[in-house]
Length: 301
Image (cartoon, rainbow, N blue to C red; front, side, top):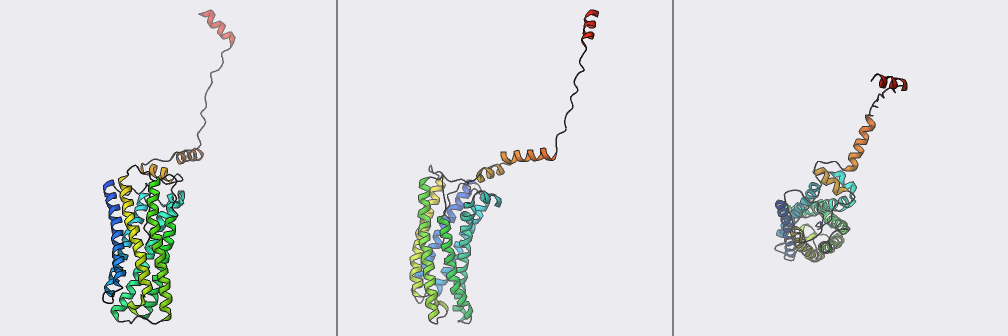
């Protein structure tokens, strides 16, 4: 359940007020999705509300998909969809862009896994192959969450404010612990269900439920600290954010202003000079006047 904790200055994908509003909505939806996720796990402790709990799982995963799709759009729009700028800053590709993509894939697998179990419960256990695929998806999804959490923890900020970096760690450390808890619960549940014969909703055992509650609580903590981080960064109370490294930020600013960077401009002029050589200008020098003619001219005057 990774939430990208970025402290970059380039997330300028719209006017200031609308962008800040979108960031607040994004953080609020993520926190609300984690609250629903906690309620979904808690409902699995009751035998009467387990089916409705599956619906809560689907709603929570759908909201998280929307949140991370927003992160992908924000980072691509922040660089004007100029993908070649990622070659100047590898963190932009391996962290800011890859984390929400991996998160979307992991959440989509978990969504499909719960959906297959819901179909099994509604249809009366007639599609037994769906159960095997559902258990595998519920394992693969948290594994991708862990991979995204590790990528999220690999962010490096050289010039960002220390307060910003503390807020970053307060976001991704709880999410990393929660992702590990979910992966462990899915693996243990898969091993338990391979020994016994269960169908439908009974494939979600007690180990999966309790470790899921533990992990969802850490996700809730990470979502709450993410709201605080977004609020602090949007207020900009003297916080210094990180810029794109490797010349990517300068190239982005110049491209937005319609200017060509100096290096590229010099290279462009040099290329034109080589492709269109300048013709040599012939200068006609005056013919030197003999000394005898000078004397004759002075005598006549």
